[in-house]
Length: 323
Image (cartoon, rainbow, N blue to C red; front, top):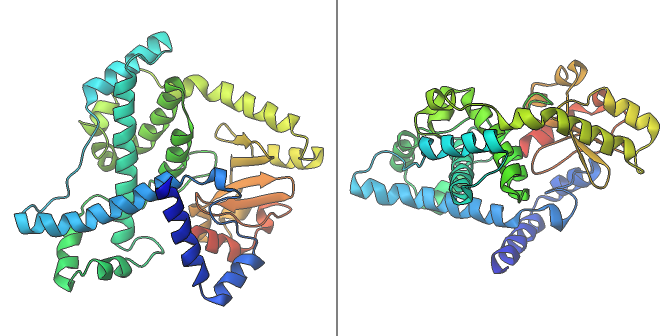
């Protein structure tokens, strides 16, 4: 609870010193930082992100003194993963819950470390020099740090419409899920993302892509059709979204689309008219509510507009910068 309060306090301190013109731009574009309510904010995850960044930056300096040149990294033991998968595919039950918890912890840590690494090598909109200055890095330290970190990804974090959710979106879903049988489905989706790139796969699972190819069956495929129908039914039952708006949303509704309480739909397929507006459109996801369509990342969303192609380039670019 104290960690949560400290994180909130830090967030609002940062907001209080933002340039006034930037704050006005946020209000003008109706940006909702960290989503709409406190209940949606995973304060514990943000705290873990801060702690891991500190561990990585301090860890390099300590390991440098010891002559350790590679960043420590943990992967999922394949034998344990394979047994859990086979049990679930044959019985629909996860019996090794401790093993699944271990897998979730490794996945959570590795996704966050990849994100931090990607940020520290300068492949996001954040300026890593602030972090290096905070930990008194010299120019030589920074050069050696880039060699120390060989694991980062420009590929895995962004959502690609209804075709694929990014690792951060899937991690958020995983943390909100309680039942082991639901967790294994989301973990399967995460492994499907990393399986598409051999380097990513080797950073998550012992044996990498070769091992993942040996897993029998896909837990997420078992639920895809059922989830699509359930989410579509939830959308059609919504009392807050008009029939006209529902008809518009269904044009972009796919197997990766989800309906959320309060009348929000996430994971819609992005039309060509939207993706052609700016290259930054590849870094945001498409959603909708009773007021129209919006783009979003795990941190922020734009205002609502009549159709996807009506979302201004300025808002798309800004939302992409928050991802």
